[in-house]
Length: 251
Ligand code: PGA
Image (cartoon, rainbow, N blue to C red; front, side):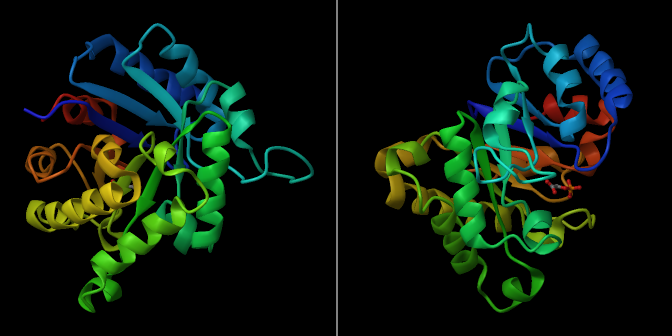
């Protein structure tokens, strides 16, 4: 049996405060604490307060934001810093999600600055890495993922890397209904684990490595059974409370 599992819901640009409230009432009414896991919620920033309020009595449930700016404060209209998110109750942040990289043009350098900013602010970054279909077909998957990971942690001490979470999300599997086979996912997770050990020594063994990309209630068990898969990061299937309950109880 695996321990210290992480189930993370990435709501992306969905769930206004009223929807988030209704979701959390359904979820909390049915989800009892399980000792072997934590459940994380990444609502849109405008609904963060609703989730934070809903989970305040529950040590097994945590909330985060989907993005931060790398500066701590100042004249950056429209942006949210790590310390602002922390002040609003976030404990986590997604960094380098493929939509940030590919839709908004976030560079590896920016991802690295955001990881450092998150740690400065006391947030746990979930560092997202993953290859495009072209890169996979060219046999570049492991190289790309390692390079993205190295760039993301280039500005922080090796010891601190041990306090992060990593998510492997193949770009071609996100929101497409296609997912990596458990074997494909396992191969990449094993490579990520080796890289984490190379960066942080034995402490790299403790970093949860989540799989993400079209995870749902039907495929989650097989993915969780794959080598070095310590949890899942779920988009679409986390928007429905019943389905999210089924996923959060699996494994
Ligand atoms: P998906 O998204 O589960 O809808 O594929 C995963 C993610 O982008 O984190």
